[in-house]
Amino acid sequence: MEFLGIDFSCAIGALRDGKFPQKDCLLPLISKLLGYSIVAASTTVKVPQILKILKHRSVRGLSVLGFELEVVGYTIALAYCLHKGLPFSAYGELSFLLIQAIILVAIIYYFSQPVPTVTWIRPLLYCAVAPTVLGGQIDPVLFEALYASQHAIFLFARIPQIWTNFSNKSTGELSFLTCLMNFAGSMVRVFTSMQEKAPTSVILGSVIGVTAHGTILSQIILYQNQVAKKEKKEK
Image (cartoon, rainbow, N blue to C red; front, side, top):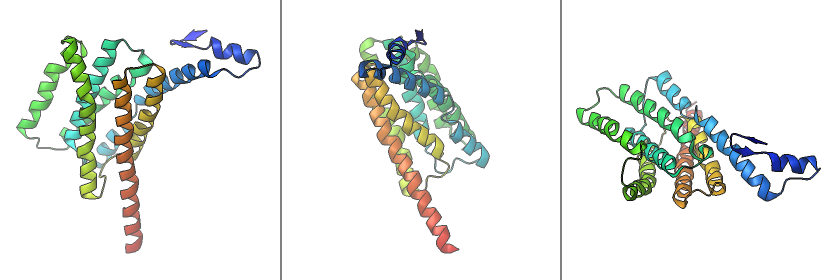
């Protein structure tokens, strides 16, 4: 019995015989289910952040560069997974995250008016290069180097935001729910990538995601608690 590439026959057979499925049978099944759960959840992961900006009509405390680098990172990661022929459950969320990240950057630009002319060079350059990268129409060696660099890109995408939060002692308009889902998704993706026998570089990317998102999430909790205590004292 197979559905969406998930083989249920092993688990169903064991349960039918009154036995609990063996580890070798259960782990791949859990990995596939979690993988598709991440893909499903990714369709709305950045929606809370988008809605918060639209509600307050403000991008206070948000690092524009960080969100731009995030778009670049998602593009490279998605292109690499497509090129390697990994199962959709192992990378499907990247396509949805990329679309939402592009929308988010556009909204940040809109509420950051006036946007310097130099800033527009970056999205124009992205539009010119992204189709070639996603189509895998570049030298294989360069592709590997590009993918290796995307880990650094994702890391540097988070550092400006982490530093901005630290400097302001506030997380501004960052969405707690979006950061929480990013952190949880990275945690689960470490497990699923290992089960899918993804390249070490893919697993490393998920580990970096756990570290970076965990840092930002802890900042949101820390600075919100500080603000709450300060307001309580003032009353």
